[in-house]
Length: 333
Image 1 (cartoon, rainbow, N blue to C red):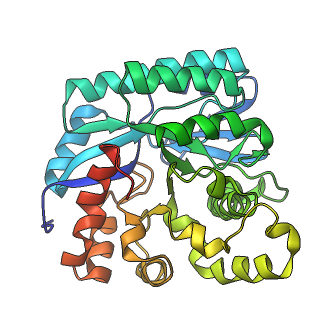
Image 2: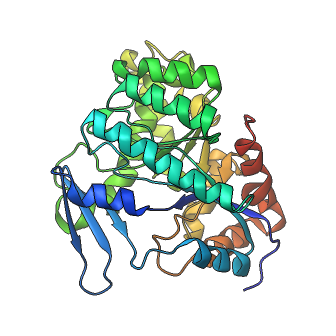
Image 3: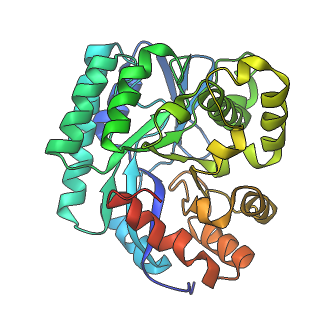
């Protein structure tokens, strides 16, 4: 496949170390099985499917070959749901540090080809801050990946305030990935991952806006996955209820749209109408390229092609390249 460049930065990429998958498989809070028809490693946690890992899991050399073929210069590695939230705090801290060190080793072994976002055990704020310091100051990781809720707790819960304060002080790149929502009726049919993930992204965005987290901590550099869930379709509703309900205005002096349009969202979809809606609603300058590799069958090409088709190719340049590089370099964009 020919692409209009060879220096794409893919911000939404996952890599599962053996240490991490072993911890997921052995934890008392999770249930793991291998899917019969394709061998995928499937993890259920809390009330539904939290993770599926393609097997065999693509290693570094396989990734580099794919990247060279598709014009991707850099993959930014991370572990998504269930992160390390499925463990008790001490074990979660140990696993977070181990995963961060293993991902950093990959990055250092292939300069420029890989970067990585740190895992932090947010279920214990003190431990999360300790891991954050280690990741940023010693491992020199550019940011963190967190989930849309922390074992059922919303991100605006007051116990996370010290973490947001530290993140704001550092201007932290904070990538928010969905997870199993705190909701019923998603345990059947893999609905937790199929539908609940997107709904939980919407819920997190609304709560962070109405609760004033976005207002109080403006220096955090937020990125949300999958075009913000279904946010582009529902954003006017959040402004509407901001005006209707006084509690939505108590800690947020600006309408939701004002906060949302200061955030970034990845383009992890190949559905062209969804990309068009996101551009019209959020703005092309609020998007960064992501493919959710290696989770989606068909590889990264459909994501590149869809974005180039919708934007005309040339207009996608900053989405696929420059904006991500500035983020990783510590800039607010």
